[in-house]
Image 1 (spheres, rainbow, N blue to C red):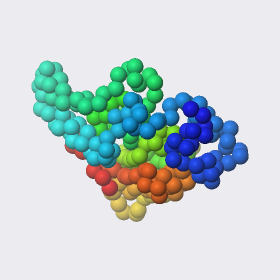
Image 2 (cartoon, helix red, strand yellow):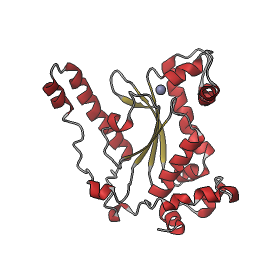
Image 3 (spheres, protein in one colour):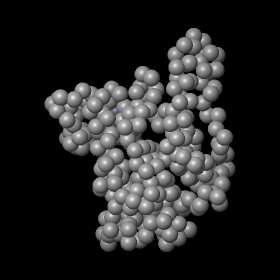
Amino acid sequence: MNRRSFLLGSGLTTAGLISSGWGESAKAEAAPISDFGISAPPDDENPRSCRPEDPLAALMDGNKRFVAAWRQKDKATTMAARAEAMAGLWQHDCFLSADVLSTGQAPWAGILSCADSRVSPEWVFDAAPSDLFVVRSAGNTAFDDAIASMEFTVSALNTPLIMVMGHSACGAVNAARNDAPLTPLLEQLVTPIRSSLTPGEDLEAAVKGNARYTAQQLSQRSTVLAEAVNKRQLKIVASYFDIHSGTVTLL
Ligand SMILES: [Zn+2]
């Protein structure tokens, strides 16, 4: 599929991409997108897609399955009991084979989450390969490469949902609230988090505020994403993952 058909297939115009900052100087960088060769055809022609009718409901349903298994797992006292508790996961109606996956991907949700080792989106949402397009960094901020990655999945893969997910006990957000010395790069990382903070709030409120702020930043800083939202091709939401309960709550 060439670049033109990729653009038309995505429902986004060349003008839209150029106006979003993919201008003359960025064209050389934009070109490789079509070279990925993984543009998603319409769902009814796409054997690589397990896209649900309501992606947000599917995410939350997946989290309910995870929470149920997670709570049972803590009660298990043997390996066999633990395996039984977790057996409810990965029971998908649509689970693509390696043969199909090797031909491409059709993720139905983009997730921007923290890099925290306890916050794996595929795990938290009981998702399978090709379901989620995931970008992670400490503090789940809207850094440039994260926005560009989301532009890619929305434009080239027709992903209809982006969720920004903060989480309890986030070390990056906590660092942003404190004055402890950081390396120059860590200081750069927490700077956007500091922009989202409100004086006097606790860590949980700060995490939630940062997730909402990041979600706003995605469409404010990307014309591609803003246009997709305006055309109702894309929904952007913020959420909060509680590590103890395993529950994801929409903000
Ligand atoms: Zn974190």
